[in-house]
Length: 400
Length: 165
Image 1 (tube, each protein chain N blue to C red):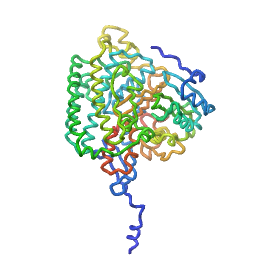
Image 2 (image 1 turned 135 degrees about the vertical axis):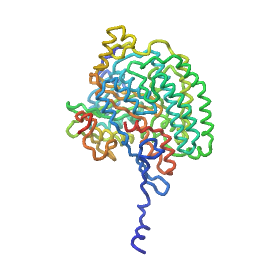
Image 3 (image 1 turned 45 degrees about the vertical axis):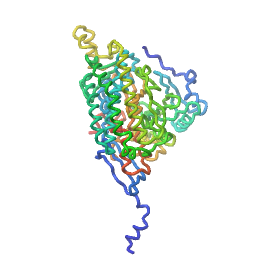
Image 4 (image 1 turned 120 degrees about the vertical axis):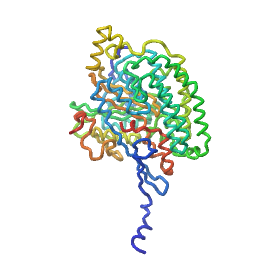
C-alpha cells in the first residue's frame, strides 16, 4: 500500500468537504454566501457570510436632516419600504411628541398591510420556485403588480415609495384610490385559494417542506428569530396586537401560530397572514376617517402647495424646513413594528440638533439569518434552499 | 401632546419589574435609571452586564427572554465614550427595557452576552466591526460587514462620512 492511499483510508477527519453556496446563487435571494461543511449530502455545519451589500446607511443617516432619512429607509428592506418608513417616522414622532391625525393613521395601517401582501407574494412566488413550482411565481407576480399599481397611485412610485413622512403622509390619497383598493381586496381572497390549491396539498411541496429544517420554540427565542419564523415555532407574539402602534388596536385580526417549527409551518403562517391582512385592509376601507393627513405642526410638516402660494408664514416654514431641517428634542427612542419578516426596530438617538445623532435599524432578516445554521444541521443540501427560503430574508435588510 | 419630562429618580421607577429585580439582586451595579417617552433605560456597570442580562432573562415573574437589539452609540469626544445598548423584550409579558453600559474610549471592551442569548453573536460582531468595541468571551469575534482587512471602524464619530481617502 502506498503512503498516499494509507493516509486516505485513515483520514477520518477529512470526511467533510467545504462548499460555497453563493454569493451568486439563485436561491440565496440576493448576495448571501453560505459556507457549508458537508459530509456527503448532509450538512455538518453552516456559516452565513454577509456584508456584500453593506452600504453604511446608518452612517449616512447621521449626515442627513431628519426628513432626508425617510427615502434612505426605503432602501433597507426593499420589499417592504412602507414598513421601514413607518418605523422611522413613528420613532421620530415619538421623539418630537407629535400627534398624528386619525386619517393618516388609518392610511398607514392600510398601506402597511398592502405592503405585507406585496412582500409575502414575492416570498411565496420565489420560495415555491426554489422548490420547483414555477407556476406559483407567475400567479403571485400577477397580483403583486396590482399592489404596485396601488402604490404608484398614492405615491407616484412602485417600490421606493417614501409615502409616510414625519407627521403624517406625503400626499392625500388620490380620487378613486379607495375604490381600486376595494376592488383588489374583494378579489384577493380567491387568489390566495388559488395559491393554496397549487401548494398546500401538493405532495412534492409537502415532501420538500414537512419536517424539514425544524426549529424548536426554545431555539427560536434564544437565536432571536422573529415574525413568522418565530410564530411557526409556536411562540405567539405579534407586535401589531401585543404592542399596538399607529392605531392597530382598532382592528380585529387573528395571529396565525403553528407549532411544528418546520418549513411548512412557516408557509402556513404566512399564507394565513395574507388572508388576515386583506381582512385588515377591508376594515380600514370601511372605517376610514375623514380629515387631514398631516399633523398640525408647521415647523415639522411641509405646508401644502396651495398655502405656500397664499401665506407668507407657510413659505417661510417651507424654506426653513428644507434648508435647516427641524430640531428634535434630545432623547432616544426604540420603535418596533411588525414587518412582514418580523420585528423591525428603529433606534433613534437625538442630541437636540436637526440631524439624528444615531439611527440604528434592527432588521428582522438579520435576526432570522442566525437561525439558519441551527435549522440546517443534519439536513440535506437541497433542504438548505428550502430553509433559506422559509425565513424570507432580504439582504438589503441584513447588510444595510 | 407635549412631552412629559423624563423621570430619573430610581425610587419612583421601582415599580417596573426589570428595575425592581435588578435592584434586589445586584443593586450596587445599577448606576442610573431614566423613564423617558414611555421607555425605561437602566445604566449598568460594565463589569456586571452579563450577570444583569442573565438575571433579567431568568426572572420568574417577568422573564426578559428575548434580546431584541444590541447596538452602540459613540459620544466622541466626551468620556466615557461608548454606550453599548441592549434592548430586551419579555415575550410573555410584552414589556420592554433598555440596558446601557458605558465604556471608555481608550480600549473599549465588555463581556459578551452570547452565553445568555446566542442571538447576540451577530450583533456583537457588528458592534465590534463598526465601533471597535471588543466583547470578551465572544466565540467568533471577527468583522461581519466590512472586509477583514479594513482599517478603522466606520460608525465611530471621528470616522469621516466619506471614508478615509
